[in-house]
Length: 192
Image 1 (spheres, one colour):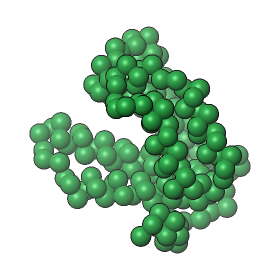
Image 2: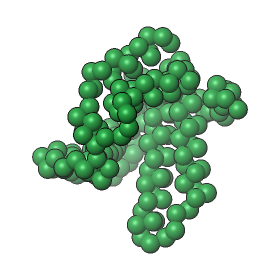
Image 3: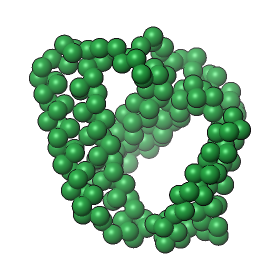
């Protein structure tokens, strides 16, 4: 099965809605907190795999943002999460579905790591299921944004070749030429 066929079959099972109706305060607090904690996890990843030193100021800011987001989400929830629901018209429903789905499936993968850190064996069936579920949500987003799997994957490799001409190098991972990488990705979008 090629990726275009996969997308057609995947979106056949997609739930479609007219507008995102949600407690906006709860949504914003949750996104802000997850983004802050995601930035911390990104620093941990870069420290482990690239040898990059932690940026203590950024970690502190992320922890503060995360804590403030938890407080805001708690207040929004205590005030009844359904009470302040409103239509969020600026959100494309399919893009929101795709992004929120990828984020929640990623959290399920983090739960796999939680169990491993607690001493359990990795649940291969569950871990692979979550990876494949991420593909389902990607298919929705790529379809909605009129992306091209093959072109996008080829451009991803082109970006990686620009970053690592020969092979992985920690210094090149830390000191990326983001402008050159962005130029490659912009050409991809122009072709679509």
